[in-house]
Image (cartoon, rainbow, N blue to C red; front, side, top):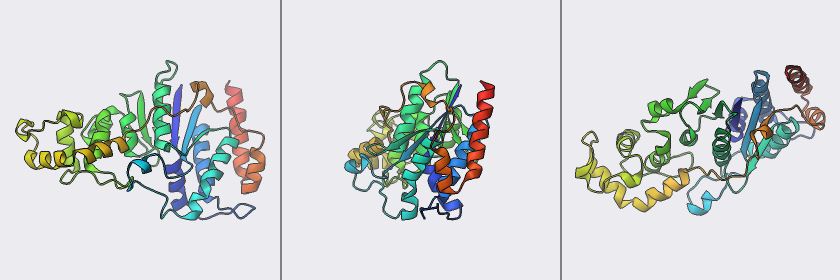
Amino acid sequence: MDVHLIDGTYELFRHFFALPALADVNGQEIGAVRGVLTSVLSMIERGATHVGVATDHVVESFRNDLYPGYKTSKGVPRELLSQFPVLEEALEAMGVVVWPMVYYEADDALASAAGKAAKDDRVRRVLICTPDKDLSQCVVGTRVVQLDRRRDILRDEAGVVAKFGVKPQSIPDYLAVVGDSADGFPGVSGWGSKAAALTLSQYPHLENIPKDWREWHPSIRKARLLAESLFDAWNDALLFRNLATLRLDVPVFDTVEDLRWKGPRQNFEERCQRMKSLDLLDRVTSAKSRRSQDV
């Protein structure tokens, strides 16, 4: 089997800014919710059998306690934030497993689910469906891969190296020095993506980098400036790496069979009526019928 793990936060943001506004019968904005439901259903219609979706039920997480500048919900449109609980309830009604994150982030749930699914011999491949560079650290060979569904780009371990210049296990170190504007931490002064790739391809983790710049590999330009900048900001670099390191201990599922899509719950019809989406109900019903015939 293949296991599809979906970044529900990314999907909701993407559809919110791509689709027109739409209200349900109660006046609740649900345009993005409908977009995500349709997108996930299309994966099921194309044959996805084991599916899990992770969401940021609240944007803030334990990382905000570690670093005051970490991303918050400030500036996120209220009409978008209000759709997170609606999406989670609608996906569950559609029969899809959802992990709404409060203490952790959606990325942590995806990383935990990918790691656990990959340990199951019945799983042929784990597809983490998000373009988020943080999740590149979870890629393992061709078994755990990253799928950018919008651009139709599948990235395995070789693809991660081709994109970033480092292996997946070095991605947190890479982000620590380069920074991540989406998550709100700046990285280390003077370190760009090229310098990070050259350095971390030789020394996979920050601790492996020689403190004496004269011991650095000759391929790395401006070694003295990079070394001085890194070791002057050493504690910050370690903090940023900690922020970029995804957790693998989030409770997600007991067995991959928990992720098997078996059709909608009884309340899905009511949910579709509320969203004025009877076309979605018809498609889900047809998908369930075809799935039953296949079994």
